[in-house]
Length: 292
Image (cartoon, rainbow, N blue to C red; front, side, top):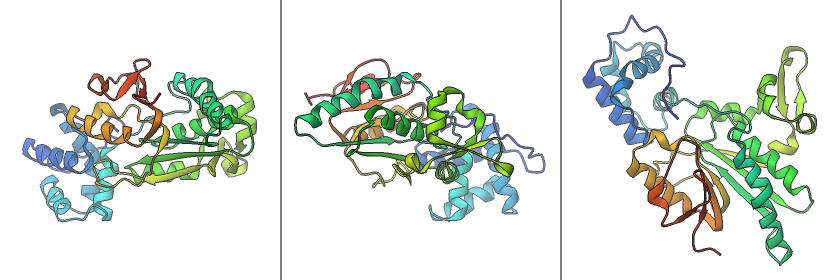
């Protein structure tokens, strides 16, 4: 959920963001989302917040900060603020080795346990799901890997950004997003858009009905995501939090894994301080310790 160059807008009509304003807004961002903005992010933050400042008819960032301080977290102004400072980069089957491991190792493991009288259920949580491509990649993987009736397959997708969750809920994407998906999966799981929807695809109900999308702010005391889960994907988000916040989130998440459950993180992320609880399988795949 980083800030990026995408979306930098003209904001010459506003007084440039002062260092003090940046620090106040940075503290507000961290307090409510956990995201830490480094010192060099002032220009990017100003660009991202210029649109809501203008829309509200405010003279500058100090006034915007004062308004946010008086606003409830669920107010339209505060939700827009949170959406403005988050960026979501994702794609179908990004970091494919995680999906291969889910299909080739984890699903057979759970199916073998079910033959010994275990449950016929698989639950996966995508904890920073963005616009939904990760969620639906998990769903396609489970549908193909299980391929048997009588199983309950559920994928929970969550994000703090309401805008990306709306995109995920629609489950409609540009057709070029399917480059990483093989032809058989395209034919089985996607509908091709026609007329005004030409060039777009939509996930079929077979896929979307196994997905549940929820807004979750990981800083909240209560999360709208109920364990236990067999696998948690928390990828490419950790790097935007400081280590104490990372550890707080991860220890809470691992408490929501089933015995023997798995955690996947992003390729650029490392969590060596979690090895007391998680067994490293590779740099980015971990299994809950003490669970056989």
